[in-house]
Length: 225
Image 1: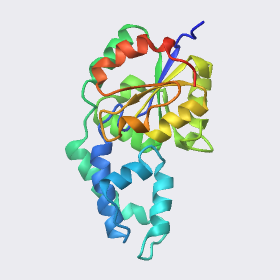
Image 2 (image 1 turned 30 degrees about the vertical axis):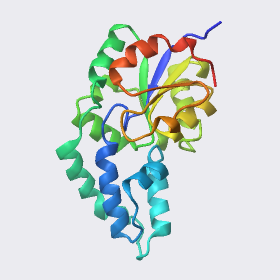
Image 3 (image 1 turned 120 degrees about the horizontal axis):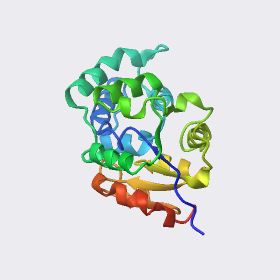
Image 4 (image 1 turned 60 degrees about the vertical axis):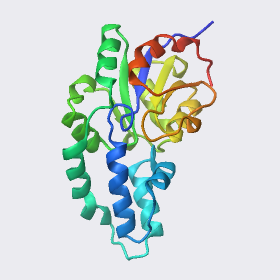
């Protein structure tokens, strides 16, 4: 018998917020400044879906200039300025969330971003009240995506078994984490991520957030990974 969906777990960057397009441009500037030039495509492949700590550690390890601890703080203003000018919800997601709420769907956010960034970006786009009290970060667990820890933590906090959870992700590391957690997933490729990176067991891919309510309604038919 199909296991019904009791909880939808949303990634934030690239799923709720169109933030990755903004951040990746700044990431490329930072990488060039420290002597490890990377294209935006390389940044997407290496880092989208991973934690900030993972990315900064990788950049520091490959830098061709000396970097002091906390070096990344010198570049934070670039992200702040870019987000202030360009950050917005993913097209169609606000309406999709409203429809899910009317249908009584339980949901939460589980993101590789830190809590302070999540509060800032969700707050800037007006989505913070929508998820207040149901926001989980990689800071809350021992291992970030692609490990399953964060999604399992979110499910446990909601009192829902993993098999009854549906993850909405846009990164290969995120869908890998959902599969490792034994959760079905929807892979959104309407942003920077190719559909081929998301396809796999227990995952249905889509590229238009207007499809989300119908996909959630039909997700019980997806096989468990």
